[in-house]
Image 1: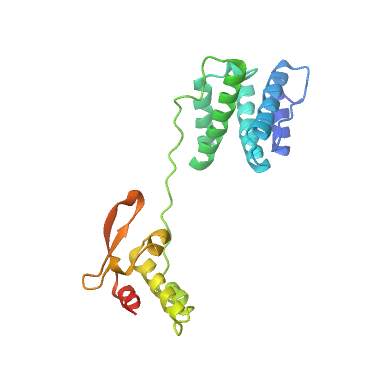
Image 2: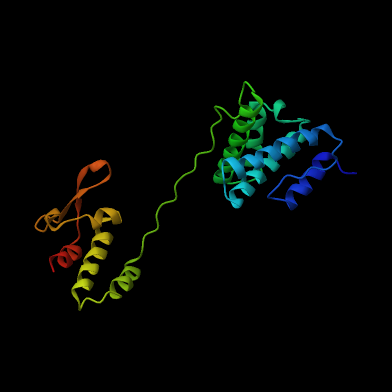
Length: 220
């Protein structure tokens, strides 16, 4: 015999882009169904989100509804901040990555903001709930032999090739953004000191060391 939670879980696993609730005579399922259908329409029509994004939001909502039904929560009106926190803790226990948990919390924020505005609910249970911190992965750098292969693809027998080689050497030597390099002028280069005068974000000027290979190619 399947409980409403079991039925919902099986259906949600098969239908990532929608929420299908069985046992229509069950008030728990009916209330969640109405809210889920309204939320899906909101995402598709008012927010005009892509099918992929809508499916992602609904998958996260599916999972939360399963959790809520396990606590005999008949609709979103019975959800508290503690329920949200406990659900986030469960996602962590289940081994979801911080990025996946942050996405799930974002989906719930959107859902409850929508429900709050539609139903005039006084409190919004996702307020003041902090998501997990997502560390930025360190950028991967090229090995010298990999960079040499790139450099050797440039035809330095023509002026455009010399220019391109100078640009590549400058990028590799300085670590500047592409937008910063293309805005450089020859007067920004101090050949004797091996420095670049760079105008970066917020029009802040800074001095950047430049390697001898880059200086030699710029000098050509």
